[in-house]
Image 1 (cartoon, helix red, strand yellow):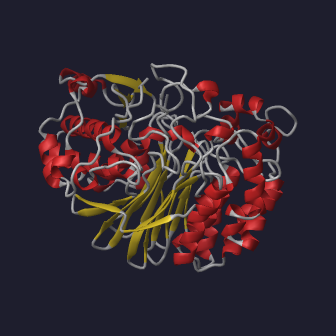
Image 2 (cartoon, helix red, strand yellow; image 1 turned 90 degrees about the horizontal axis):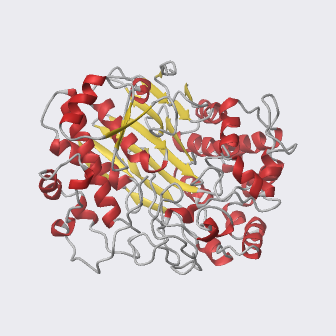
Image 3 (cartoon, rainbow, N blue to C red; image 1 turned 180 degrees about the vertical axis):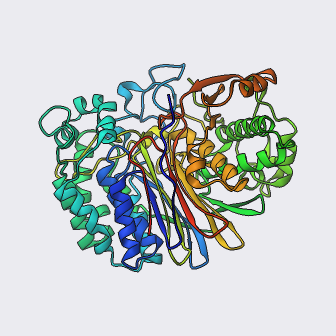
Length: 553
């Protein structure tokens, strides 16, 4: 299949990149009206939740990486497990694994994958309001107005929006409120229909008037909680009222190729992205393309092995955070680099950590075998934002509490349902997630803003784009459209556009591949990126399969 291709777009005064044209236009209009990168990111994120309901919304959560007036950090608002959920909350029905997007062990009725018991505490509204409190310049009511208008007046879905509904059609047969909202005549909508979400418009309007407490403590919270409790879910009023977002000064920062890479810390995909880059820089010994790609595959596989072995919520498990990114550990671990999954094992970063090893807990290893969105904003003041928000799976849990219009996440799916593991369910625990929005800075400021949707494939996508854009002068769109690999499973997934001679050369040194066409969004993750070029122009890139859109101002 031939590769679809977005046209390169450039601007000196600012840029917005999202996975939907309507949301991009909302953010760009905010920049034009004098708003900054945070203002535009908030408005775009809320709009995305209306026009991309399969992927994002206020019933989910995420991370916002920022550089604002030379102040940098990460605002975290990931979904959190309910205080009433524990290791006995799900009944296991198989011992082999291979169920759901993370291939965990099977749970009775798929309770952790969809429905009321799959809902975790949503963080999006908390995180967006905290971002605004810290850096916003336009009143929140004005930033929410475009999303309210899109929900109330409607928007015209195009082929990709309808494709998303068809892809998850099974959920519409199981959840009546979801079907009522997106199948207005009881059947698949056709092109040209006006999609309206009046209940969601009312909810957003109440929040815009009454603030963040309306969602977590007010009437909207009560409507959400009452229905979930009546139908056997875990989420309760204490969960909602006690939720708080994080602000991590600087976030997690590493050096790569004379640049600073900033990503979310702790139980996210950020650490895996950072480790992949550090391993790659340590392993890479050749200038040949095949040698570099082989080095990347080895680096990514090592980062994933350590991720599954050690990483979890630091309030519940001991994790060697400093050891995992220490230069000495990276150097020693790189000596054992291998592209063969069967010959690989996790390292021992505790030997390089400043704190003593705590209680040993078994790693959470999935049994191997479209529900996120990302946006980037760069303003005329050289401020930048990289924001990922997710419902987890497509259309989240499938649950829309009546009269709210809010699609609730299925964030409990992130947990390993087996007890006694680093990522097992515990009351009030944050599950390990894959989100990895990032900024890359040089001496002049933000050089790259990027991130992706796509589950476990996100970190490989983000780290490869960083390497491609820093190691050459290609534009953001050229980087996004170029072939990639994915190493999140034992057998490496290779874009079929790579030359056969390259595949043969890599196979001779031990690589094993599955092949897939890079055209389709779900195969290698769905990125969005902004790059500041050597001449000062901003270029934007978004996956060409879908409704992603770049707009300069």
